[in-house]
Image (cartoon, rainbow, N blue to C red; front, side, top):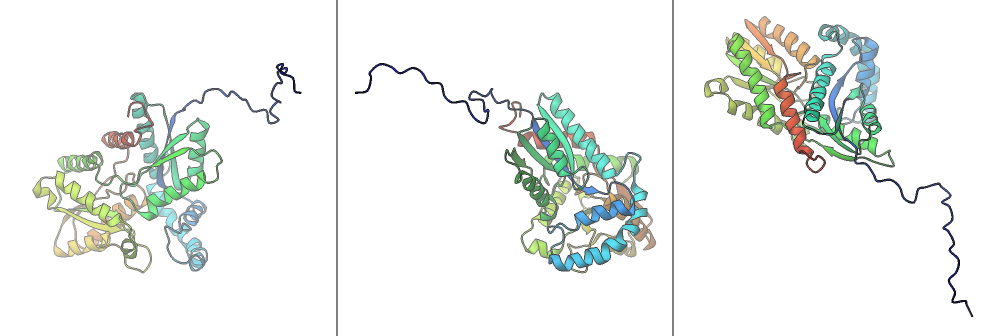
Length: 357
């Protein structure tokens, strides 16, 4: 018959892995914000440009043709010839601090962090480039090392496209897919008609006109995409048109009538979104239009596509065709009003994470 007396207490066996049965309370940690722009070579040299183009043009969301065929073209032709041709173009836009795209993107990221911290937010902000440096992996590593378990990704693309915003999401989630302990992730998809973004553009435009006078026409030039991508469901064209409508709505009617839209940076032989920027400017000059301004609302930081393609190549084309005055209005860059608008966009996405949002 078993004894009714209580048995002597037997301690639990020691955990063979040394795990603490009563771990300390988990600290929530700061909120991480990853600000992402497209990318740029590390320096204006053929080798650096080749490395950058090899990564950028190998993304299947950027070049949507069969991989085997594209790799032959990319490595057999483009990477052998294109980098050397681009060296003087990059040298012509390079700033003392480096690539203008990185310089101005850093300024926006720093401004965002300063503003949010001044409002009492416990946040950390890191800048990353989708292609090149600083990389998305480096940015996410830096945020995680600072204890960020919640990370908001902020692409510096106001208009959504699969070849821009979506590929940022691909890279961030691909990074997380390799982790055992994943952070909580959020993404901003678009802010193409955000009032703060639109007001920043219109203020920059009207300030420029106040100082320099108004043109006969203003051309809003967006980066182009192949037309077939829109037919396949990409909302980019709609986002661009919404941005244009929002800009015109804030202008007086007589100024809104000056506004036209075009698409630049066409690549390859297939049809892209039209009208094309340079041919539009040439046709205007042929019609007798003498004074034009060009602004690129889809670019938040000046880069090769704005400073060289628009400010240099398109100016030359317009003047050569008979135009007299061509003025490029710079991107928002480090504009304080835009930093405030970006802060407001981010703050709305922090609801539920932040105590003050």
